[in-house]
Length: 420
Image (cartoon, rainbow, N blue to C red; front, side):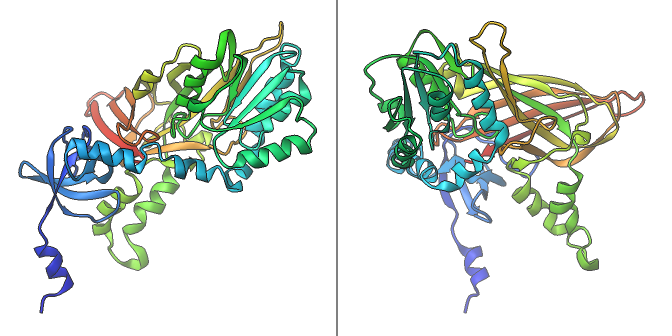
């Protein structure tokens, strides 16, 4: 009688087709192009599979592969909803996320301050609050300024409760709640101000920003105001000793035993994707941070979201272990009032904490760096061609040593799926 393991070994590999290009990082990952046919020999996890391409075997990201030809894949994507609206809007129909957002005082007070600082300019204006959730920004507008109307737009089932909150707070004469996607919105007039809290992890994740841009192009009058008015993504090389020890060094001698054969698996499981909700201490920043991507919310186009590229050049300020990069974002709200300062919401380690915290991208293994070393390279945010709320972040770096007589150049590339 065959054992279960023998049955696994005898199982025939399955053929899959690459949905899009992928560049492997490290010798154990395969690189492939869109349309390549790969043989999948094993599926050790839901995220990484063991596959073969042109007689070469290695790990591949499962989200980049599909069974069937391109036409079938396109049909499947349509059937499965590439925007994942049911899941996405379903999550905003519950209180868990709204509690998290409303409890974030830095985020919520920033929007309140914008309305308060510009209350005179908002008088008799038409405002759209896109993705309004529980309607907190719309209520700020109604109570702190005197707009003619605020269109509070919410696609999730929370909209019905938002109507109750508007009435409960005596704002029903000003705030009109509209349930539906921005793309399906119908208004009787254009708006003077479009305000939205659209930012996701690493700024763009979930791509709500596309809905904002579509609403801008259709409903914002010429000369109208966008809040936020601009946004930037910031990057810094960093140390992450505690996280590395927790996920990787742990396997060296647990209980006095050698578990190092599990370290490659740990690397695949814990370091392949970015770590959301990371909290970096300022002392863990190896260099001064650098803005790598900038968005002008008046000129940004939907097509620009497919791929965004930035460059960086850092000079190490103190010797340490280069474990990876940490990212965060900042948004700015332009002022409409003479002499009033613009409002900034910064999610970095030197500002008040937010529910976004920061995002950590771990290298496969740490690199020792010395003060004066230069870390330069590029970061590319590439939108998933099938699953439209997802993207990959590709980091390419070069380390030039400042010490004479050492190996003065180390290079690396790593691709991080967020999430597919």
